[in-house]
Length: 399
Image (cartoon, rainbow, N blue to C red; front, side, top):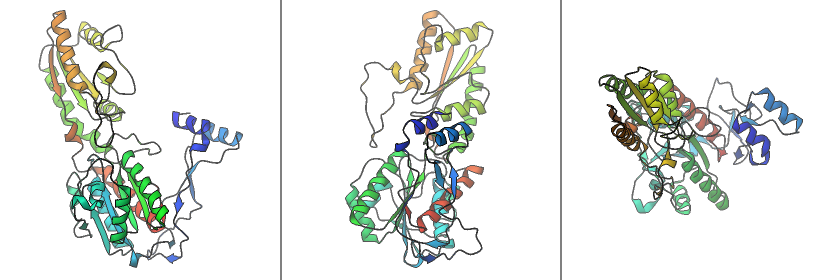
């Protein structure tokens, strides 16, 4: 069993996969000729036989997700529905694809006439920032998938939940789509709690976003595949630079604050990488298993170059007595492990009298600001469609 399955078995009371519902669905859907999904249809959280067996031996429920898809009856009347879309946190390939998918499904499938694009994250719902919302329709989003970033912009940081709910009420919003990571969805949950307290019936639906591919219960996050594909150019260049000098070493820093999925998958996808350093696995510089010792062994074995990939959050324990800082979202700002490694390798080579040539590459923001490619774009559309179906059926406080 994996870590998450063990956590569920040890603390089953902390895992409730049931979806909140605003009320009963009485309105016939305008969608025709579809295979509709019932709320009783479920998808198992895990297909692991050992996990399922242990759940049943302990008289635990079958941990299941509700199956996504269109419902035959709706909670929100499309004729009276006003929706809003907000994108928060860091940029990621596919944001515009998700926005386009949400708008087209709302407008073309359900006939929703009023769709607001909230500018610059949750700030756009705070009047003091003076960001007017955009009115979106299929024509305005027709070609946005060709561009990276988000046409709505984004921002980080907490905002006043009461003021956000006031804005939703003032605009007559009854569906809010929040596209973002864990911080965004913590904010969305707080919005739901305040809306519930006020008895405002608003569906708040999250679309999970993180380029790092590290959200629990989300097997794959959009933009991740594109980010791996986009590392091809920099890793090829790093390899060429390393090969182009005697005992050449290229250090490449990739995104990954607390997880090493981008670094790991990029290294697996491009077999030119010799060392991959990720936050999940501590490493040392010296000693029998140290990185510097590994480089020595590689060159002693007759190799003439080395390519090192490091995730931005790796090796943070190597920065002793360094003041910790946080960004606007409360995330710890990582120390620059890339330049640190390059400097340490250079210093070690000088100390040992080695003729090593070190080059450093940092493509961090280049790989997140691209449009989504191939099946990543398809996945964005699938997420958007599923989110709209859930919202129209009156689901809330969910992703």
